[in-house]
Length: 177
Image (cartoon, rainbow, N blue to C red; front, side):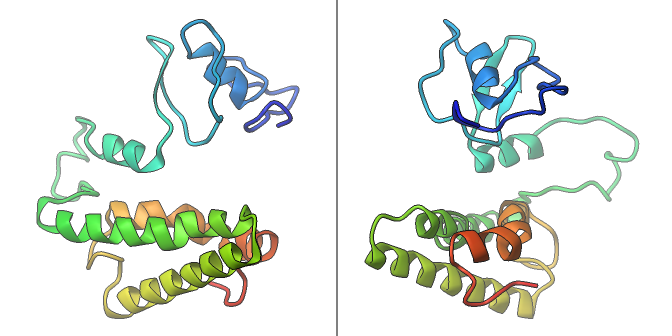
């Protein structure tokens, strides 16, 4: 990842663009072939046009939820709608605090440039985790009794928390386990 972004194994380059790292994917999908911004994941690419659609995880989740996928199984009432109309206000409110306090909070703590900034970010992370605990204490999922976009957005941080953010970013005053 010395060029910025994730690196693929030398024997297994990116399967879609044959790039050695994420910078290569960004370059391949940028007019002129030279991407100048930060290479972040996730990345949604339109392979037919070789264009970047988005690298913002919240936008990607929302786009994937809006796909019109036609199969017999998904046309049943068992299909998952991560952004149901009746929960949208609650999902949007939940997404806002999960992002600010938890998802972005761990990165603010990990990459801060002062002790006071670290303390504020680390405090926010644990305020957010307590808020998530409270929400999950009264319901199965963050926005109620069904899985929604809010749960999908929090999942990567929750999965990585104990093993990565708690130790490397020093946010481990309390673990998720």
